[in-house]
Amino acid sequence: MGDLSIQYAGNDREGVAGYRRVWAADCGNRTLRHMSASAATQAPPSTPQYPPRITAELVKRLVGRIAAGIADGSEPKTVTTHAPFTGAPIADLPLSSPADVAAAFERARDAQRAWASRPIADRARIFLRFHDLVLDRQDEVLDLIQWENGKARKHAFAEVIEPPLVARYYARRAHGFLGPRRAAASLPGISRAVEVRYPRGVVGLISPWNYPLVLGVEDAIPALIAGNAVVSKPDTQTALTLLWVHELAERAGLPAQLWQVVVGAGPVVGTAVVDHADFVGFTGSTRTGREIARKAGARLVPYSLELGGKNPMIVCPDANLGRTVQGAVDACFSSTGQLCVAAERMYVHTDIYDQFVPSFAAAVARMRLGAGYDYAAADMGSLLSQAQLDKVHAHVADAVARGATVLAGGNPRPDLGPYFFEPTVLTDVTEDMVVCTEETFGPVVSVYRYADTDEVVARANATPYGLNASIWTGNPRRGRRLAARLKAGTVNVNDGYAASYGTIDAPMGGMKDSGVGRRHGRDGILKYTEPQTIVVQRFVVGVEPPLGLRFDRWAGLLTRALRLLKRTGHR
Image 1 (spheres, helix red, strand yellow):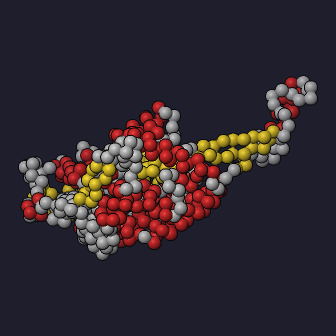
Image 2: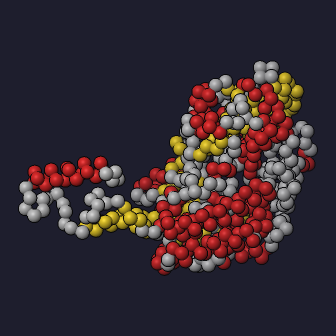
Image 3: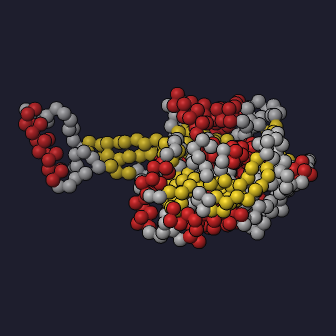
C-alpha cells in the first residue's frame, strides 16, 4: 500500500461531490504525507499503562485463572498482549498445552455431575445474582474491554448490557424450556408421551476478540443453566475480559472447576477443545468454521457456528433521511466496524441518493476518533491490531487503485495510535474490487445506487453470506415484505442490528456461509441438551390384533380411528 495524495474531484456520474484519493506509486511507503513521520514511528511504551479502574493486582489475579501448566505442573510458555490504543504491553499470559486442555475437560466433567443433579431453579438463581454483579461492576469491565480491544467506550457499553439480558432471560425461562414436556400421543388414552432433557456434558466454546464479553459469556450462560460444564477458549488478545466475567460468575455462586478457561493459538488449543467437547460452539471466520465442522462431524459431536457476513443495508425512497443517516453511522462503524453484523454494503434508492449520500458522508467525516476511557472521548476507537489495519488499508487501496471514490475517510491515523483508521465511505465500487465481495471487518462501507425493489433484493442476496441485513423505510409493512425476501438470519427494519440481536427471545444466527445453528431463544438453550422421549402404554397395543380379532377387522378399526382423529381436530 502506498502513500496518499489528495485531489478534489466531482463525481459527475452520481451527482455527488467527493474526495478522490490517488495512491502514489511508492507502494513500500505507508506513511501519509499529511502526517508527521514521528507520529507514525513513535515507539510504544514498554510497560503496562493501566486504565483508571484496572490495577496490576487485578490483572495478576485474572491471569491466575487460566488453565495452563495444570497437566504436569510445568512452567507454561507465555505470550504478551498489547493495547491497541498505544501498543504498550498489557499482560504476559500463560499458554495452555493440549495436555492442559485435556486436564481442564477432566476437571469440568467431574464438577458437572454434581451440577447437573441440582434443581434448575438453583442453577438459575446464580445467574440472577450474576446479572446484578455485572451491572454493579460495569466500569471495571468497560476499562478492560477498551484496553484489550480498543473500541470506543459507548461501544464497550453495548457489550455490558447484553450478558444481564441473557442471564435474566434464561434464568427466568429455564424451567419452561428444560422441564419435562408432555407430548401428544398417537393414540389418546392409550399412550402417554413425555419429552425430557439432559445436559450434553462439557461444552467447548471458542470465542473471538471483537466482542470479548458478549461472545465470551452469552453462550456459556444457557449451557451452564442447562446443567453442562464449559471449557472456554477466548481469543488470547482479549482473554482478560473473559477471565473477569469468569471470576464474577464464581462470585455469584458458580461452583469452582465447572467453568474452565484455556488460552492459546487456535490450531493448537482450539483443536484440542474440539477434540474433547461434547458440543462445540464457535464464533469467527467461515474458513475456521468449516474446519471445526469437519472435525466435530468426524466425532459425531453437534456444533453451532456463527460465521462471517457481508451485510447489506437498504435505504428505501421513503426513508426518514435524518434518522437513517444516524442509523447508518451506527450500523457501519460501531466497534470500528469490527462487528459480524455491521453493514458493509449500502444500497440507496436513486430518488434520494443525491440527498442521502452527501449527508451520510458529512456525518461520517464529523466522527471523532480517540483513545479515552470515558464516553465523551470518541465516536469511534481503534482497530485491534496491525493485521486488521493492514487488511482494511489494503481493501481501500485496492478499491481506489481500481477507480473507487472516497467520500469520507480513507486514511490510517498513526497520530492517534498505531492502529487507527478513519471511518470510510466509498462509491464507484465494482465487482473486481475485494471490498465489494470480501468481508472487510473494519470501518469501511461501499455505497451503491439502485432503482427498483427486485434489483436491490437480487444484489443484496448476491453473496455467499447471510448473517444480517437492515432496511430503512417510512412504511413498516413495506419493510416486512422486503425483509421476507432477503436471505439473512436476522433482518432489522429501521435499525442496523441491535434490535434483532437484543431480542433474546428470538433466534440469532446465519444462513448460507454465515453459520449453522442459532443462539438466543428456545434454540439457544435446547441445543445444549440431549432430548429423550419416554412413552408409557396403558394397554398393549401393537400391530398384531388384540383379543383374537382377525387382522382385516383390526386394520379397519385402526383406519376408522385415524379418520375420526382427523375430523375431531386432533393433532
